[in-house]
Amino acid sequence: MKLAKETNKSEDFFRRIHVSLYQTDQDDIITLANPAMAKMFGYDSPENIIGKDLKDFYVEPERRKEFKEILRQQGGSVIGYLARMRMNTGEYFYVSADSKIIKDVKGNEIGVEGVLRRVKKEDIELRRMVDDRDTFMMNISHELRTPMTTILAAAENLQEGRTTDVEKPKALNKIVIELQRLHLMTERLWRAEMIAKGLSVCQPSNVDIWEKLSSSRKMMIPLAERKSIKITINDEIKKWGPIKLDREMFTHAILNLFDNAIKYSYPNTYVKVDGNRHWLDVVLSFQNVGPLISSDEHDKIFERFYRSKKAVAMAPSGSGIGLVLVKDFVEKHEAKIEVKSVPYKEKNHRHLNTFSLIFPK
Amino acid sequence: MGQKILIIEDEKALAEEWAKGLQYAGYETKIVTTLNEVMNILNQLDFDLVLLDIMLPSYDVSDRIKQNSIKWGRIAGLWIAKQIKEREPSMPIFVVSLVTDQKILDELKQVGVVKVVSKPISVKELIDIVESCLGKV
Image 1 (tube, rainbow over the protein chains, first blue to last red):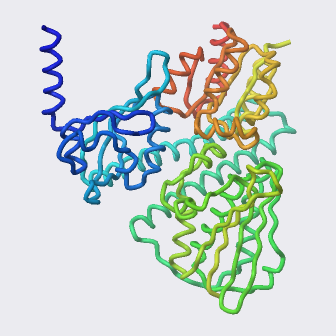
Image 2: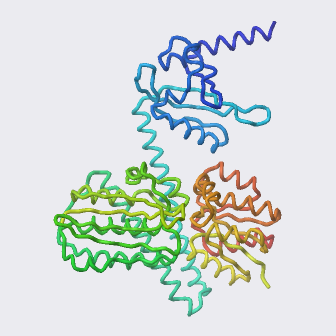
Image 3: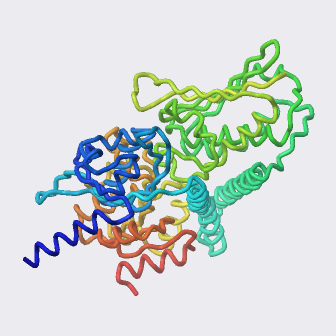
């Protein structure tokens, strides 16, 4: 009697509560929903939504698969996952989901249950900004601390007499390389900040492309040597003569293209810079052997702070702002950038990746 | 013969400096810089301590491992720590990391990692921690 009373109370609570509660089976079919859940998607009663596929309420149905993958990665529960959903009228809205995987007694996944709350688009944008900022701070902290640790260790070994006379030039060279790395990073940060504030100004002057490519290559050789990567530049570019460009923007664009090409290259491969002059424009391409850059990422990689999982696995350090500088160069020079990623020599995980800068002569 | 330290660190320039300091303090060292090298050494863990950077790139391993390491993101080293402990449960592992995620730090503790410190760290601090992990202080 007491149990029946408690069950009635729970059912009553489930019916009255204003937040949307749901349960699905492992194929995403809704098996349980309260009236708030039905109303959220434009239905009169839970009976009308039960039996439907929750994926169909996502604006991008593939996000459901991604969501479940995140659930598994995070140990079976997620709080505050944001998704764009649609009502039965087609109207879009945003939800924040707190969900968990349901398992049977043997530990097999049998479905997902959780709570959905409607959130404003502005709240999502704000949250993304905060998340981006957090990710960026973590990335940049890693990227700055590693060279700092190397400088500290090399300097301390020199100071404490642990470095022999024979080893001294190598140790000093390490310090110089790591300081250059830090200099590049801080410069990149400063420029990215200027771009974000709309203060990046283009001041064209005559730029010797060959000279800029050669000096950038020289700067990048020590980093490339660590992975036994050879950098070559097509000699034909020597004949180009000066081209009107913003010197600083161009320098940072190519330094970042070199840096990325090295960072995302397999060891013992190469980075090749090629050039072609056409009637009205020139094409400068940076080619390396790296992981696949899938076509849906060709735009995303130019977004501030974006780093794909593959990129993180390949190179844990990275701020996700290098290509923002390349994009800024492209936008300020009425230029274009094209990305190509094609399989390399039957090694299915290796791809020939080419970033081509196309700008007016 | 000094005790042997295995240094797993993808930044070779840094690993060499740490090795130099540890050798000066009387230890023998071996450096491995890639996940593939780690895989090759897992069955010959003839060391007294492992110094591990848990953020290792995974460009040189099989597709199966690569798929996992994409899931791990930056924490391939957590998997390495587990593999080492499965083979040599008493092996002290000292992690130098930039990870601040409490969940990962808790997992490292669960695996049996004896110490986790953040970069930057001086060579002197590194030697002190190694000695303390080996029960010398």
